[in-house]
Amino acid sequence: MFKVNQNYSYMDETVVSKLVSRIFSWMFMALLVTAGTAYAVMTSPSLTSIVMSSYIVIIVLEFAVVMGLSFLINKVSATTAKGLFFLYAVLNGFTFSIFVMFFTPASVIFSLALTTIIFGVMAAYGYFTKEDLTKFGPMLYAGIIILIITSVVNIFLHLSMLYWIISYMGVIIFTALIGFDVNRIKYMVIEMANGDEQALEKASIFGALQLYLDFINLFIYILRIFGNSRD
Image 1 (tube, rainbow, N blue to C red):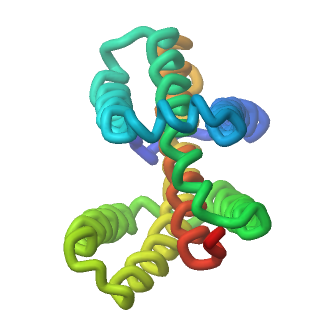
Image 2 (cartoon, rainbow, N blue to C red):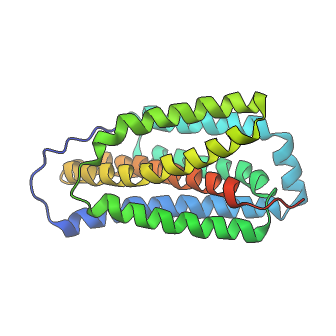
Image 3 (spheres, rainbow, N blue to C red):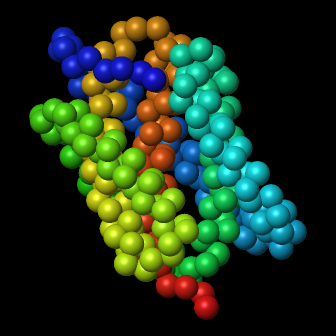
């Protein structure tokens, strides 16, 4: 995982914004791949059947790919990192298609629009703020751990109140994470901008993965709150 040192020298803001834009470009391309994959599955009964019958296997593969990319980012080539990133986007599209099927198209579109607005606002805040947001890292990571534990517990308890607490907690945590990650990515870019192009390219993919995960998770929790069931 890439570490960020904020003791940097002055750099042209144009250079920084160009490099950060590259990271956002990778993220948006991955989101398009996920959306396209999900749409293909949802509009094909045969693909839907295959995905549903292999759902657990796909989830395991997703976990393996994202963990592999996160821990091996410094050891693999930039091309391999890109391949793993987009493979994860495709696998996520498979699982995402089944999740989205439970909600009405109108509520999915509303949740997506709200997610996009929140992401845009928090990304702008994270980029332009002069405040050091990295100090909130330990608190946010602790929140993610608590979120995961309570989510697993509720799989067995099926408590409605806990479901809503988890959903709102997820929105709060991932909204904050967007600003935090963009802020951290900006400083990472500043530190690495004059370094090795291969390392910068891999850092761009890793940064895009973090923002991609923030967006997807925020969308999921917003959809849990505002989504209307098809039933």
